Amino acid sequence: MKRPMPQSDEEWRGMLTPEQYQVLREKGTEAPFTGEYVHEKADGTYECKACGNPLFSSDAKFESGTGWPSFDQALPGAIEQHVDNSHGMRRTEITCARCGSHLGHVFDDGPTATGKRYCINSVCLDLEES
Image (tube, rainbow, N blue to C red; front, side, top):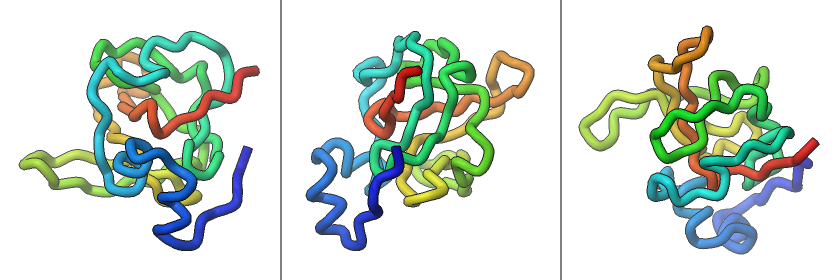
């Protein structure tokens, strides 16, 4: 469910845990295999933890073995992609199209027909079960 958008950094800090803030607002990464949704199998829609924007269907989730929840496609218009040259790598960062929060990265090595692997931090997600 979409939530009101914070208007300041102070408001973001007030609504997110320190770990959520570090990943969502400062482009951090949670440790692999530690996230709540790594092995989640429930049906539903994964939403942005920061603003409630629907991001991924559970139908798009697959087991990648990487330690982070992985999806082969995002919901239409849910995410934005940005070139990320940090840490000596060239990657494609994924952010929430509604609030701009960092979610993870997308890679072109997915095992499904889309060829995509959206590698997303669990701490960035809420699962709205159906």
